[in-house]
Length: 253
Length: 253
Image 1 (tube, rainbow over the protein chains, first blue to last red):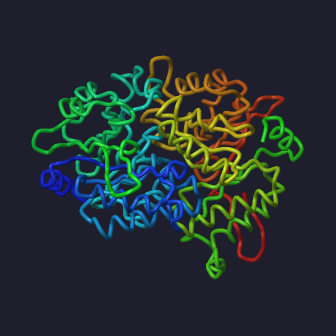
Image 2: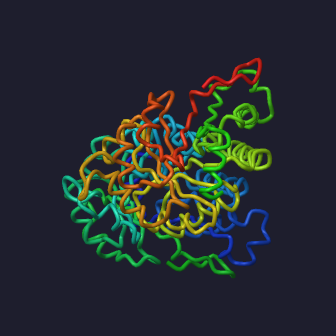
């Protein structure tokens, strides 16, 4: 999916919402546990109910791997369902992968060629050759962690590097590996005011923004500091704040 | 598996070899492709042939995920086979995971409770709450990336941080989260001379050392700079340099 296509979808639907698919079996509504594949069924209902209000879906691989082969099967079914029924939604595998070149190439194969995701989230610690294999696929995206929404972001990301803070160094260095046509960055909404600093370094890259909702980030601040006027430049994720009720497909965001 | 048990195995077998299980179907011997599960069969032969010469096995998850549900099934079978037949081998899931707390907890569930691995490799970029969920399991280990063996380690790990280089900052900060009883570090053999600097910061932690073999690291330098006299403190990995021949179980390291 190209940058122009993503922007077109956002403008047409007037939303930059990305719906996270983090199904925790222990927290699913009880009636779903009677299904053959409760995780897939939960996802299917969330997907059908939210598709018209969002432009992107983001399954978080941990929540599938926790159930082994059965969970991995649910992940494949979920992605296939999105691909078949909502082909214009931007599909992000939230996997936080990244390894030496030959291994990252295998992850790229897993997520782009087998699962047909549009994008994958990447941890940047191992540097250029851990990210570049993901940039070799036309129309696919590497979404690199820059400034995350969690408490632990203070440990390294927000401490001093040679040239600014670590996350700024990651932005500056990694931005040279790709382009705004094949790279995005994760910048947490819990650090919304810092989006102004992020925009000084990467004025044109799309930002995937988690942390609105359960984690407490402010949506208005995200827009104020992070949006690019014409090209939008934001995908705002919500996962745990989206709930499926028992009786119907009512969704509360 | 406790630190004392690992040391006991190393001393008894007089080896600190860890055998990497990175099966690439495109590179498997042709006769294995006739098997129902070529990846598992390749692994099984490698495992049986090397078990007496090593103390650890390390499947690399990318090489299984690249084949979807089928690959994930091979991963589960491989780990189950090791667990049943070689229960005293230290089993490392080389997964390079790490995410916000609730997600890392799901990865810990996936690798420790479902797959029954002893250890998992972790990317440290997201800080304390991305690592700590892996430290809450008795007898299980978080193996944190410090100084990796690849070219991209120069991009961030070997650049200046507030207090030394980035990888040194990662060692200093993360060492406060756990103990030498539940944390190890990845330090690449391609940077063997830097093991002396690593040992100044973490004198007692085990180090998992990739990069000997295909990547060109020196084993004698690893021992010279990295070994702890009585407790050994090293697990040296080899993956691509271990080859299975067609006719028998001959192994060349």
